[in-house]
Amino acid sequence: MQATNTVDPAEIAKFEAMAAEWWDLDGKFKPLHMMNPVRLDYISRQIAAEFGRDLNGPTPFTGLRIADIGCGGGLLCEPMARLGADVVGVDAAARNIPVAEVHAAQSGLAINYRHTTAEAMAAAGEQFDVVINMEVVEHVADPQGYLTACQQLLKSGGLHLCSTINRNPKSFAMAIVGAEWVMQWLPKGTHEWSKFIKPNELCDLLIKAGLEPVDRKGYVFNFAKFTWSISDKDLSVNYVTAALKP
Image 1 (cartoon, rainbow, N blue to C red):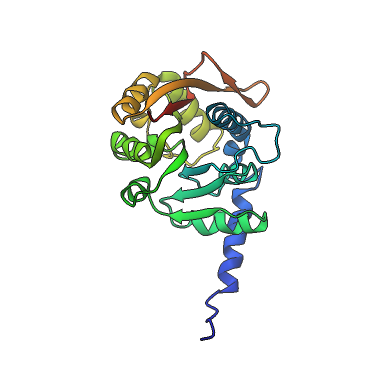
Image 2 (cartoon, rainbow, N blue to C red):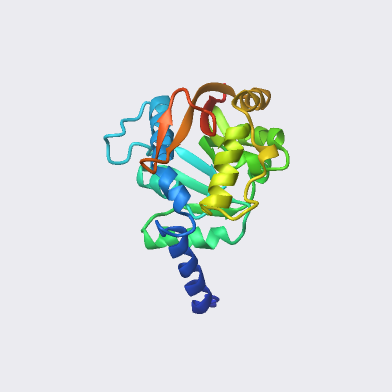
């Protein structure tokens, strides 16, 4: 039987236009592009250290299965795929998936994008070496349940990488007043300060989920240089954690 072509070129064109916006360095996702180098540096170094990989090699993550939960347009999925990993990008927002798929195809990358949730994949018995969970936990209704699902997705000895925002007056000033109201990097209402999570609170949540926290660092924005950097000590606003599944 001849296959029916159900592709609508006009719809594909719409997705291509949105994909260009996701990957526009000066567009509405500029804050993520600015932060991405420090995120990628931390993520890649943690994965390489845990699995004994040499980042100087062409595809050091070959053989590793990585899930990026809340993948958006694929800003982290694509670098992981270029490093050789088998990548599954997951997002609960249905419209993000075709956008990410179009850009991956344009980039010549094979990435498995899915409109689903961590809970649904865990229930289906999916298993990964690494779960990447960047700037998601502060947006979910049940952080404990969500992190437990992420833990269930990991193989024994697997690595969980999670970033979020601290809850204190400085984070309100920086992440909400500064980023949303003054700089207008994000739409007003993107974040709820009450849902931000303090580092020690996240540590407790990870332990209760069955994970063993092994590292945490801060992402620090320098307004004078307009750049991000990683800090061993300053976790006052944005921060990232690494945890292992025993």
